[in-house]
Every structure is written in structure tokens, then in C-alpha cells.
Amino acid sequence: MGNPYLFIVGCPRSGTTLLQRVVNAHPQIAILPEAHWIYQLLTEATVVTENGAIAPALIPALLAHPKFGLLGISHEQIRRLIGEDRHVRYPSFVSRIFDLYGEMQGKQLVGNKTPGLVRRLDVVHALWPEARIVHLIRDGRDVYLSMKNRPLHLDPVALGGWSEDLVSTAALWWEFNVQQGRDARRFFGSELYCEVRFESLVTSPGEVCTTLCMFLGLPYSQKMAKFYEKRKRKRASDPSRRGLRDWRSQMQSKDIEMFEAVAGNTLEDLGYSRACSHPGDELVQRSTRRRNLMLEQSARSTEIWAGRLSKFG
Image 1 (cartoon, one colour):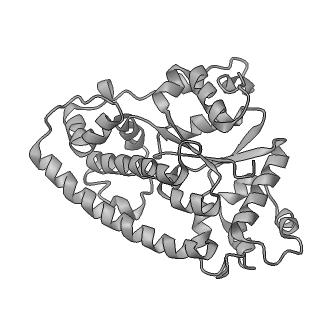
Image 2 (tube, helix red, strand yellow; image 1 turned 120 degrees about the vertical axis):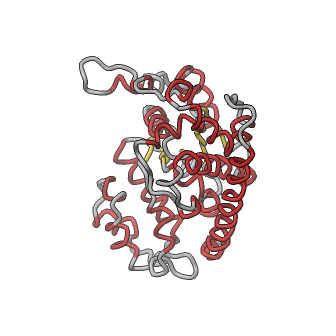
């Protein structure tokens, strides 16, 4: 039961922060906040040697990363993690950081919530093949509504277009993230991969928490479904039900048609009903061209990462 014990992933704006808070409320497991540095550091040739060991340049690069600073881990603590071991490999070094964070939180098991890792689960599996994956999926039309007023810094595979075609770009982005996560099931298998629906998490938190505990091999804890009660407000209330998106009442019909023209098949595959059974042929054809370009970009990115990960084989 080593760390990282699990990764919570999903298309950004799908509710992964809510799931993080739920799992983190379990008395035996802590969830490290977003840690893009886990894979971003591997893009810098100077921080890891050819045999996968950490290089001296890793420490300043790690401390300079804005997300790492949120952990409250000092330079001296990092030095102690390395000790006299000058040949510690990168996966082992990151595991030590997770262990340290667990000690700081008073918990033995430590996971991480980084939504974008849903697109780099090949990296996760190569570095920590026994880590568990919890993939959160939410109706893409509600994800679009959440993105609408809070545009994200999209991965290059999204092919831009955010300002000129918000709905179709969001639909492609959601579909791509969901499919990347589901395709990764072949790496992990049912014992290490679990899908959770956001809608079920909100409407039936007890059932979802029971399933999660069984998947994680942990005893059930009521604290998970009542995570919000630890907040210091005098009148704590369940925040998962406030400000929920509802595409049925909040999306215009033309936007629904455009979204479903792009990602309608994926919505159906996941059990989400369509509102527009016959979207326009032109919209469908345009989305097919953009999807093919996106997949080509993704294939090239996977080849690049395969080269980076070869040193850990």
C-alpha cells in the first residue's frame, strides 16, 4: 500500500475538487492538491538523468513551481528526503514527498487530485503501476456551463478556437478528456480503475462513498459524505448542492445542438440522453475534422512521452 495510493482525475470543471474533499475526509487517506509538477518537471531535461535518477537541478525547479509551494514543504525537508542517496529515482522521490505530506496530515495513505492527469495516465502507470485511478465523469453539457464563464488554459491538443467557437471546442475538449481516461483502463484493469459519476456523487453520496471505500480497500467512513461538517462556519451545509449547473434550463437550444453534434455519441455511450436527436450534418462534419486533428496531435504527444518514459522502464 505504497504512495501515491490513488489519483483523482477527470475533465477539468467536472467536480474533481468536490470528490477530493469527500475522499480527503476519510480518516486514513489524505489527498494532495493539484500537482502538475509531477509530470511537468519531466519535460525539463536537466532535472532527471538518463537512468531516471533525480539531478541537482530538480530541487530548485520543484521549489519554483507555484503548485508545489502550496504543500508547505521546505527546502530542508526536501534535502532530508534525499539524504545521502544520490541515485534516488524520480518515482521514488515523488513517493517520498507523498509520504511526507501524509505525515504532515496524520495519515498513512496519500493520493492526489490533478484533473489534467486524465490525459497523461500513461505517465502515471509507467511511474507507479500499482496506483489506483478514480475517474470522475460529468455530463459534458454541464461541464460546458462550468467552463463558460471560467475559460481554462487548454492543452495544445484542444487546437485553440476557444473565443471563436466556445461550444464546439468545449465539447471536443470534454470528449477528449473523457475518452483519454476511459482508454487508460487497459493499463490498470478493474482492480486499479474506478469510474464515478458526478451526478451520483451529488444525489447518492453514501452509495458512492461505499463503492469508493471498497475500491480503495478501506473501511467505510460516514465522514466522507459529511465532509462539509468539518468547516468552521456555525451553520455548515452541503456545498455540493449549491450552484449546480443544469444544461436543460441554462443552455440555449442552438448551443445544445452544437454540443451534441460534436459529442452526442459519447454522451449516449455514457448513458446521458440527447436533447437533439438529429443535429445538422454540417456541424457533425466540421466536428469530425477537428476531432481528427486533435487525435493526430495527441498521438504525436504520446510518442514524445513514450521517449521520456523509456528511462523508467
